[in-house]
Length: 282
Image: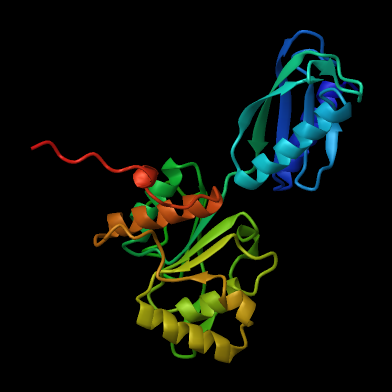
């Protein structure tokens, strides 16, 4: 089996298992270098690798940059001079310059909507537009249907008894470390959160559409149910970036924006924050 096949097969298997990995590819070589353009190496967050882009200190630098790219979830192209002070480095490098494209490979994030109400529909459309998989769960068949959510990969019904406040087990196959959960039900937020916040592995994001008062009350009731404090600390509410949102579409936009910021480890600040916004011409 060729090195190329080994690397690409390992990449495919990693993504199928839901792992995030970085694919480093030599895209340009100037001067003398240990590998030609096209050499590839797969890097895991813990530093494991398959394949090689040249060995020695070059490879370690690429691994370090690939691990940083995995944290940031952003690809990049890096140039690596193989000389130090005009002399080839002592670790087997050859005196040229190597350009390496580092690409982050991962399965698409899954947005799980618990509740199929008025905010869920624009939220589903926007999440689909930014490339997220979509799962919709509700207890009302007239709301949770493939016709209402054509973007969804899965639309599921769950049983809920309002008299006893008993919620059937949620389908755990849709939850995991790459799932982003938005809770906006008509009346079963608390039992839903009691399940979601205690799932393992924990979701990347759990948000509740609620006012500050409702959030406080639900948080207190979840604590009384025995939900651990560290799990409650992961609950975001009110959710969304502060856009002054009022309509369902505006609220959905603010939620998707926050989810993207969390996923990309971004600040959510305006890009113009570091420089003055030009004043409007008189």
